[in-house]
Image (cartoon, rainbow, N blue to C red; front, top):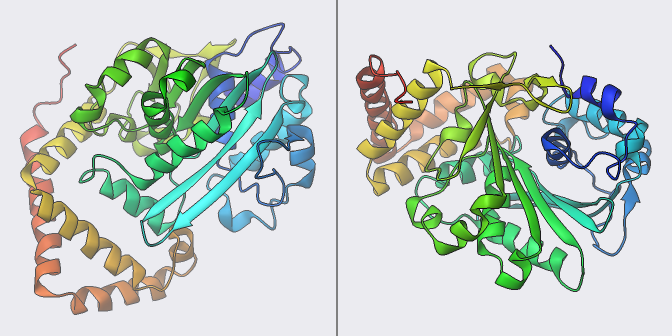
Length: 363
């Protein structure tokens, strides 16, 4: 079965004027935002470099600690070699971590042919802040990264006659949808498409809005058959189910998604495990009060931060010393925080028990 690298070999010689942007192209552009392009892609929207140049200037060795998936540098190298992508110009690269507001945000813009710009939002990286912001998604209707994404898109769209497409993988897909929904109408009218690749949904207050109805027809959402992350929170848009060669959580890796010709390989429904996990998570969250969710998140990340690390990759490099630090931190936690962790585990198990025999989908 073929993947996106096979697609690039087969379709990479055709320009976008010869064969217009498709779902796989959108996924590739969405994935490229995960690469650490500091000192490679300009921060300004008025200055840009080609993907061919970006690949030459990018150093996988110097950036290895910031590379989330080992296939990402390979993807950059592959697109830089094919005529379809190598002349695309990249600009507006930002990568912000804000410890005070618990925000992780990164994005860049790709100039395609015919005056179209693709705004690519990065999903969650390996930083504790990025993951803590994801946890905060269950208690906050709006995240700092969503507000930052909206501001970024409106800045990119000002004073230009370009048309726009927005996209992202994981949290990046959520940011693309949020930006399209909430930008001013004059900018929303410039949007041709919004792509969400296995990104979480929103609280009901947001997806039931008039702004969402304005962009509904423009939204293209995709999840793998055992999707977990893409099923979180509420979705009101249709989504396509893509076949992945990986199992369970690892299907979140878009490099495992299967393609045929110039599109994905689609399935009729998600797996039972995907329904089970999403129903279990929903039940778990319903059992917890707002205060319990906040206490659990604070306690969990207090334990993680006790390692004096800032990224999960750093814990992986020193698992024994990190584990010892976390055990000491767990013992030092106050009674309330220990109780929050214990209650969360009990409620998660209770929710799983309820759903274990009820995982057959309704449709």
